[in-house]
Image (cartoon, rainbow, N blue to C red; front, side):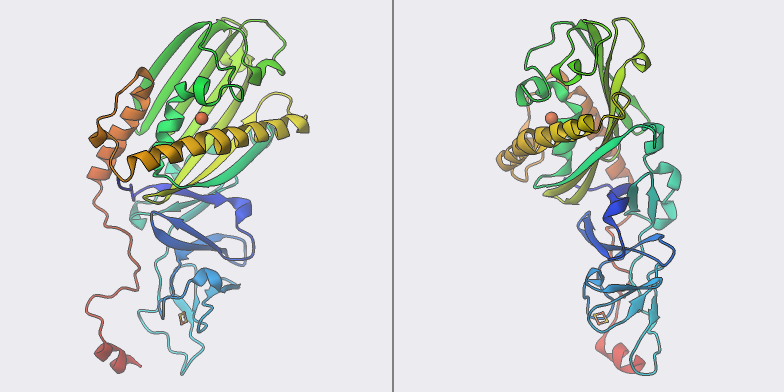
Length: 362
Ligand code: FES
Ligand SMILES: [Fe+2]
């Protein structure tokens, strides 16, 4: 059980960050996000360099964030810009670690590893999956008391649908049509492509699909290392391309808070009934119900049974539905082994710093 440091993690939706500082925790690092005067998001280690107060309890002053304890102000580069005390001299170590942050397509992303390696092109491109702003979106966020890879396992093996989501997302019946499953790996992406051909539509699509009695159903889940997933799911007339049918695109953004907690943000868009607000409400309610009432209790129960033991050391039985999840785990293991960046530590930690040093510089 470990983290990949050199990666972008979703820190929340844009609207989560207003005028007030926002405290988040990613990879066990307390972070504070705030907006500078022109609205640009900034992300710093949420621990003042003086007596380590959470900056997130402070307030935004122009482009700076002011510590709530003794008033030091830090800029978006993490360097102290104002010392209200003494001769206003700014000590050389009065700085906190800065984390690269990007705001794009209604999401905030933070890079947790070596800042030199942060590349904006590596951020998950939501616009490539969503027809923004023409297709309506619904969204939600949850905090889960589980290790993040258990959530990845859940999303990459949708065979649980007919049991865990019987009566909610599925009709609880094994496919009456022909099932095809294909798992592909390309770069740092694992795709689990499911096709059920020539069957009756599931209750989920039945209301909105009136063009044929039988349908081809596709459900394609793309896992992007380390833990963001895009799900394309929809129906079309038998033998016709997916683009001619109706479909949902859902992104699942998993952000490890700690080894035992995961923040989960999801956003869904659709290409059908786009003017119908009641369909948006029903979709949001269905996803919300399925996850909070069905997936989350199950994943939490699994975590409780597993404790902190690594999955593979428990020698789990592997079924056909595990193929994509196993490939994702192997790929992530390799990426974690390959990276050399040490765990993030505050820049304010100075080796050899002592009380003598303090007396000389005051
Ligand atoms: S703890 Fe921040 S200024 Fe003292
Ligand atoms: Fe599920």
